[in-house]
Amino acid sequence: MDKNMLKALPPEADIETKKILKQLAKTNRSLAELKGFSDTIPNKNILINAILINEAKDSSEIENIVTTHDEIYRAMSLDSFGDSAAKEVVSYRAALWHGYNLILKNKSITTNMIVEIQSIVEGNSAGIRRLPGTVLRNDKTCEVVYAPPSSEVEIRRLLGNLENYMNEDDMQIDPLIKLAVIHYQFESIHPFYDGNGRTGRIINMLYLVLKNLIESPILYLSKYIITNKLEYYNLLQEVRTEENWEDWIIYVLKGVEETSRETLEMARRINHEVQLMTNEIKEKLPKLYSKELIDLLFFEFYTKTRFIQEGLSVTRKTAASYLNTLEKEGILVSEKIGKERIYQNKRLFDIVRYNK
Ligand SMILES: Nc1ncnc2c1ncn2[C@@H]1O[C@H](COP(=O)(O)OP(=O)(O)OP(=O)(O)O)[C@@H](O)[C@H]1O
Ligand SMILES: [Mg+2]
Image (cartoon, rainbow, N blue to C red; front, side, top):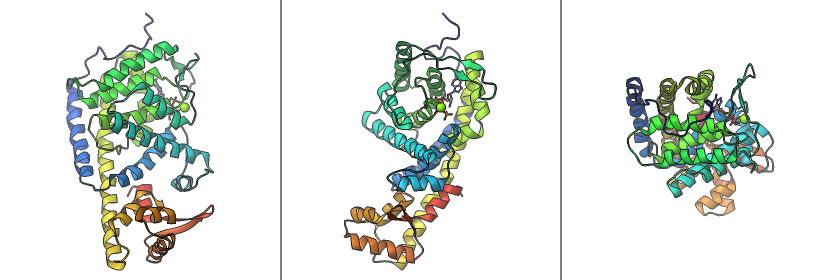
């Protein structure tokens, strides 16, 4: 057997070393705190949507798809997209939502689901690699660092093995340690021509949901990876060349720890803003106030007459006058995009954009 050939899971190495377990305890604590907080938030869609926009933006940036929050916002509110980087970000977010709904329904992660997610990320249906020639290169030197399995049969076999590993119910190894193993394995199988990184990062989040470590996909891991990108590539490679699982697993565990903390901060800020705005509307515009209205205002960064009309079951005229009033009170800011008037929840947008 070729020594470079990717081995099936589980790893032979000890993946529960003292160092790993020590970090694991810290990571579990900070993740539990996030879960505890998000469990108390009434409308989780608000959080998911807001946090996802950053996750999608950062995750796409790893692939050098760079865009701004403003462009993304425009792309979301228009039916046809202008900027193509923004469009990719919106696709990433759509793929995550889609995957999340599949997990809720199926309570498992399967190869077919992964194929569906990747096709939404990439916007094509090329599917699993059938042609040889895909290799991973060093970003700078362009030297080939790894050739993933090339036959479709082999790729599917390894994906099947990964699928079992993800879904099995053995409580032997902590799911957070398994998360690191799964991410390494998925990226090493590298089943698609492109989009493996982004798809893999979506799987990370879905796996945490599957294992009930977070209730909704709000853990915002891509920023950590971009910030520590070189280390990310090096450690992935060291698992292969030196069986250095320990440093890789600790890297991922630290990422989850840091990210949980940051996400908790942002979740608190958003939650606080929901409360402030609720109080403000109750006080200044008591006739307009309803819980449903607040939910609509925070569902996305913007709203439109039609959303209010449908969401509150009021006439178009009433919906338009609500929005107009909210703008006069300085709660929303409107702008004409394309043919439509869009009302931005600037306070929410700023929290997410500046993360402060
Ligand atoms: N040495 C390596 N071993 C295993 N996986 C690797 C290695 N180097 C890079 N990768 C993975 O390959 C991904 C890139 O693959 P691909 O271009 O298909 O994905 P992408 O989503 O288009 O890119 P990106 O991750 O840059 O956004 C990286 O994100 C990383 O997870
Ligand atoms: Mg790519």
